[in-house]
Length: 234
View 1 (cartoon, rainbow, N blue to C red):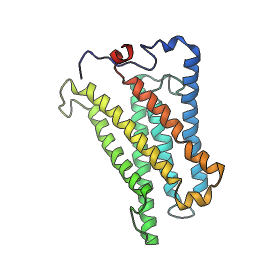
View 2: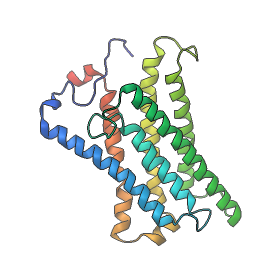
View 3: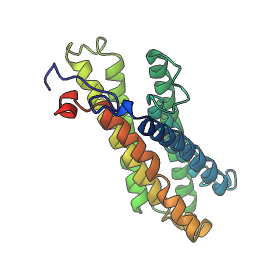
């Protein structure tokens, strides 16, 4: 990657900041993504009735990890509609790390409850597409966290002076892959016997499509923030 390529936040190079309608639409979209992530977490937690079984804690932990914490950890860098817009860059990075640590803790806890539930019921592991996708998502999350450590501590890991900039780009790109994997995994959960027995009809389609909205907002934020300025102005 050429060293003279600069990265532009959303709208720069396109003159989009001059259009108030565009700015307000983006702000509304980011706020709606926050609400969607929180709403999905709350509703899924209520539907799972935590405490009624070992499995009941799995949807709670996983929705908290990926629908809420992962979404907030990415959207806090958004300039439009983020409740943390008053924070400094350093403060946002620390809060991002805190959110990602919660993702790892909640995801590991949810995995533990699922494994325990399968063992108690003597059902096979990795027998569905949802479980396979979930395993891939967990592995990608762990790798993404390792990449984040490289971004934060380049000198400690003896990386070259040109590596941090590229690592930030790779970190953001891998983060997008993790988020899209998590979105597909959440959507595949809608096809599970438990969810289809709990939610039916139009409500099922609503739950199935809702995770796509914050995914589109996150994808737009990352791709625009790390798109080379030269390509934007060409």
